[in-house]
Image 1 (tube, rainbow, N blue to C red):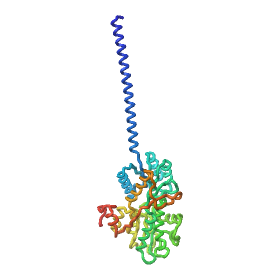
Image 2: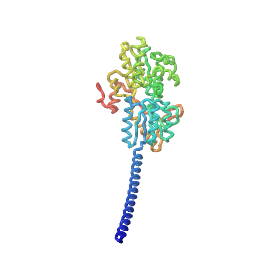
Image 3: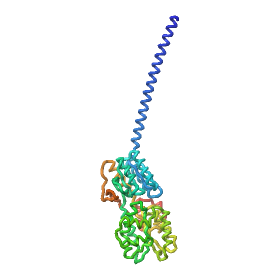
Image 4: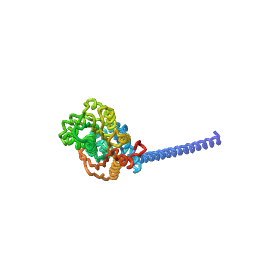
Length: 389
C-alpha cells in the first residue's frame, strides 16, 4: 500500500469517526429535546387538568320534568357568574345511575356535591361515596335519608307547601260534605311525606268536623280523627293516592277515582294535587267528567304551563318555590364549604340517622288574583310566555 493510500485511509477513518460522533451527539441532543418537550407537554396537560377540575358537582333526578331543567339552567348561570367550575348530571329516575353520576363527579375532583335524590333512602349509598372521598354533601330540595353523610339541607319549607294547599282549599269551602280528593307524590320521596303532613295539618280538622269528605282514600277516612299521623300511617294513605310524580299515572288514577265515584261524590270538588305537572293531568281528567261542575285544585313549582292554566282558570293555585333563591342558597352553602366555613342554619331535619342542619327558603302562594305581581313583576317568568294576562 502506498503512502498516499495510507494517508487517505487515515483521513477517511478520522472523518468517519468525527461523523459518527457528530451524529451521536445530535441524536443525544434530539433525544434530550424530545424528553424536554414531553416533560413540557406533561406539565401543560397536568396544568390544564388542574385548571379544569370541577369544584362543585350537581346531580338532579331527571331532565324529563321542566322543574329540573329550570334548576340546571339557573345553577350553571349562577356558578359561572361566581367563577366556580361545575357540572350537572341527571339520574333519570335511576338510583344506580345516580350513584354512578356521583362516582364520576368524585373522580373529577369535586369538593362539594349538591344532590337532589331520586329516591331519598337509596341515595344514601351515593352520599356515602362522596363523604368517603372527603366531599361535602348538600341535599338539595329533597332530603337524603338513613345516613350521616349529609352535611347540609337546602330546601323550601315543604310542610308549609302542604299547609298552603290546605289553606287555599279551606278558604274556598263552605258548609258541610264538600267532596275532597287527595293526591300525593312518590312514596320514595321524603318531600311527598312533608307535603302531605302540611296538608293534613290544615285539612284534618275540616275532615273531622265534616266540612270535607275524602272520596278516594278509605285509609284517610279511617284516620280522619287523628290530627298527627305516624310515617307509616301517612304511607298507608300515600300508597292509595300516589301519582309517583308521573303525569300519566296522575291522570289514570284520577280517571279511575272518577269512574268509581257516584254522582253525588262529584259536583263541586276540592283537589289536593302534589305538583304542577300532576295538577294539570288531574285537572284535565276532572274537567272531562260531565258530573264535575266545578273544581278547585292545588299545585306547586310555578311551571309556565301551570301559570297559563291559572290564567285560563284551569288550575286554581300553585306554590311558587323561587328556584332562583333556592339555587342562590345552595351555592352560598357550597361556597361556605369551599372556604372552610359552616353554612348558616335555622332548623334541622332528622333523616332517620342524624339531624341535618338547614335554612329553609320561603314560599309564595300564586292565584289568578296575584299571578302578575308574583310571577311577572318579580321577574320569575317574562310576560311573553303567557296569553291573556
